[in-house]
Length: 192
Length: 168
Image 1: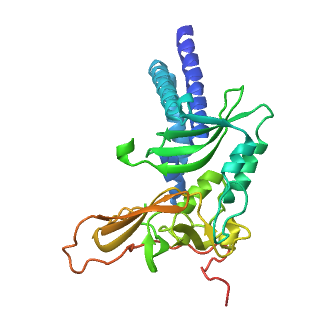
Image 2: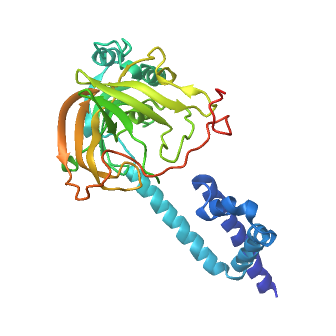
Image 3: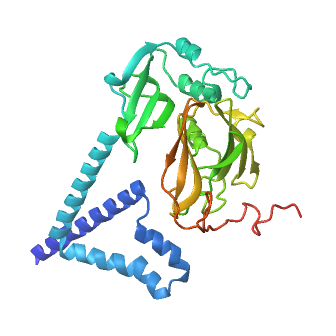
């Protein structure tokens, strides 16, 4: 009898772990397609359908996990591993500026001097970066006193199309790379 | 997804449908995008811009949009102090102007194919090259001429449940 109780106890703990994982995933990735579809039809759904979705289905699922917790544990571990692999792949695809992309080190004053924008019709502010001036000031205001700025040109492959990206990047001791992008341009396939 | 209403570009004295969104690049670079109201399923970006190429420079000269609070948006909403014209110096890329008869209608984005595409390459708002790409010749004499979309769902203006502009 005590082994049965132990089996059920482990099953209950596994069910709680599965619930925590499900809530965590929902918080991170938002509601699932099933949840969205249910929300769209909820007002028209019958009482039985609402009861099933809110109480019956979770109860049956919980019971199944308690009864078959070895399978549930296997699936939980598999899911966690797949999630970890996905995050690693996403991190690898994330746009980063490397040393190869750096062009030259510049001061803020040097950058602002080279980024003045001219328009004969006067349709741009007479300030560095023109209409991007407020964004540039916000970027500069966020820099620390010992920041070093570099101009860069790189290719961003993190999205659905390759982009040529240019701008200015700041290297910090923390390893973060705050950057101010001045140009984003689709690359022709021949240039990729 | 629905085929999208195009922007408008005045180029060489002629009005063109423009299947590119240079203003979207501005919002990406600044991280600052007004809260545009959804106008219709054919305009997910929430605005329709009017552009002009003058002396080889790209200018934004008009904007049609509403904000989520119901207020009408204009150029000064995004570019205070510039009510009439804004030099699009932030834009580098290729603008596509479809021309001729429709060869293939695709009810998604700007994916429909037309007989020709005029491609304008810009570097920091300045036109550096314009080319024409020939996509084919329409065999259907009744094919639609010029960029158009087939259908869309229009949403009421925020704050105006009956969709009126409150002028009555």
